[in-house]
Image (cartoon, rainbow, N blue to C red; front, side):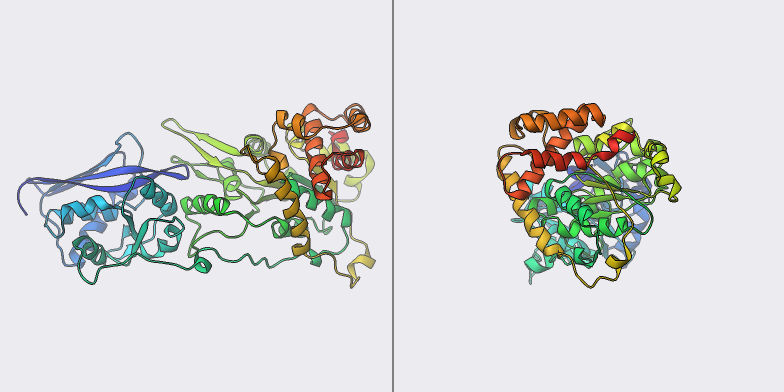
Length: 502
């Protein structure tokens, strides 16, 4: 080791679900032994000096008795996590001339160090790999357990290694060279295998029809009925009839789960998410939050289903927070130093349980339904009553349609919608804006009169009127018809019978 030296290693940090480049600058100079990290580090980063010191010693490299200053640039953004252990340790090892300095410019480095020098998995590796490819790096160096996640990004070398010694060998270009990891498509994209099926549901034909319409157009649903009617059972089977996720959807969902640290040993999230938070959940748990914002349940349900059972039991403030993600399909969390957005395009499926038969009688329906605010109800396209299942249906040996059969019909309807909105960033009828409804949902005089009746007698708001048209458009798509007929509008109106009670 010679005189004062400054080394730069490239890493990344997260802003929402996207990564940005972080320059890890390590200055090793003469002076009293001291280790300091600047650049708005959190406690996990500040503690890294002890992990790095032990890891270098146990790998046989030693720790220089010098003044070491680490700067994480840009310095005006808060950094968190343990992913900087690896790049900081490489900056210290560079002062020993263990490898060519130009090799540090070839890769983006992420990884937490164990005390024995092994690499432990970190969050957000998929987003960092996307960044590494965009920035033109030759590859990304990460812990072994993050390898499958990073391999989702094509055309970039992924070096998922076990320990610090292997990283040094990679930088020294020793023979045999450490090769990037390759994974099969079966490993990266697991085949969907739902454990539940719609054929297991007895009766409730009109409810299953309503859920089919909802799945075909990605419409929100509210189910009201007594306990034991099958509302939860129906909701849990809804993902099994949704069309398979596209590659872009898989990447988006996997990024969210990677940032949240929920990927575990999966390379990708291949099934549509189903999230069912308890009614005691906080605002931050549902929408997202924290000093450095993290995705909440609405984002973890992205491209899938968010199921809220016992809807009136959720705090009013929590339910009001749902309005923005339901309308914008995106949630923005603002803090003093930053504003972060997370995607939240999900199907809301909610359920309400009257406590007893008297509470569900005609005289008390208005009081019970009023527990849900009108603005929230307006954003729920389909509202259906789920009656108690009759005994003859419970013991019936007749099986209903399978999820696979229903999913095929829904896939055909979704294909029509994708073609319809090919020139727009819209993927389902529920996402149409007002101008799109005017263009793609023309109706005749008879249909107009039906909707006029709904506004005057059932109390439809302007938003409810528009959403009824969207549902009618989906019903027509399921029927394979280009024009919306009066029977489609009539069915769509029947799915909003609860507007009159609120």
